[in-house]
Amino acid sequence: MAFALINARGTTSPEPAQRSDDAGRRIVSTRSFTSAASKAFTPLSCEDAQRAYLEEIELRLGRGFVAAGLVREMIEYQLMTGGKRVRALLPVWICVNMGGRAEAALDLGVGLELLHNATLIHDDLQDGDAYRRGQPAIWRRWGKAQAINAGDALFFEAFRCFARAPAGPRLLETMTAAMVRLAEGQSMEFQLQLAQDHPHALPPTLRTWEEVARRKTGMLFAACLRAGAAAAEQDEPTVQAAGDYGEALGLLFQLQDDYLDLIGDKGRHGRGSDLVEGKLSFPVLWAYEHGAAEAVAPLRALFAFPREERTAARVSEAIAALQWSGALAATAAWLGAAAEAAQAHMFSAVIPGWIDRCLAPVAHAMPPAGASAPTDVGAAAWFAPRSGDQAIADVVP
Image (tube, rainbow, N blue to C red; front, side, top):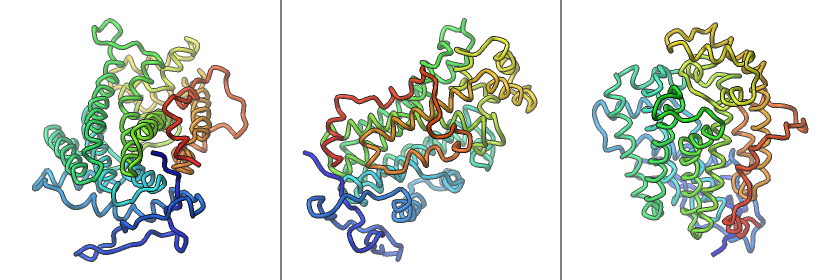
């Protein structure tokens, strides 16, 4: 069955209808929407979606936990550190822009945000990151064992949210598979850092980076887009195609995150936190594959030191090596090519303006519009048409 995108805001007000629960809190209406047959296509913008739904998302993130005692305290602390709530908003925004009711997607979005934060708690512990969004990480404040408990509890709190959502049963396999793939990606990232003579080592190549990123970041984005389409009661080919686009968006997001670490600050106490951790990010692997040996030497030297000896001065030398080798310029070119391909994809009409928002943290270090890109940039292939995209064509007018 095919649905056209609709005007989710109605014709009289840019804000959705509202009601209050028993405690007097404002929540989004579950009103039915007017069909596209009689209304012009006006997709909800990201800004409008944030204004309409973020307050309710935050309310739901702060209530309804089974967890009590210290576990609840740690969960609430993690959520209070903030974040853009991207994974919470995407399912709701997509659902509304595909003709669904926001209420059908809100618990899915909240559950996905809880899953994301569960992975962040464990990620900080595994990577030894002492800070998250400028605040002490859970493991640093309460210890490693308690951080495992907090992350485990958040995983199950997330699935309680999915159980409450109308599309929850339909998405159960998707959500669980995404978590398995994410764990694989996390494991592969550590395997990528092993000495090449280790039996579990992975080759330090851009191809390996892509396989890691598809699992570690792409699978959760895919789950978000699948959730939004399923909540809007789209058919299975459309849900699958939405997930394919989401997986590619995850690659774009991870690429900008790798780049941001070198030209900005991700809230982990300065530039180059990935280098300090020993992560072989996209720019590092590009330098390994394409950079001259003398240009990459300071980078390789940094990783030869144990973590505690990767000083700020050595990290600065490594970043300079990435600049000199051409890795930073190549990463920016890949980002530009991926963003252009993502914008050209028909599903981008469902989340208008999101690509620009995704790249906003690195916009100051991107090449000017129209600048020529290297001919070997392959990021556009991430968004190459697939057979399932015909289902999306039936959704977008």
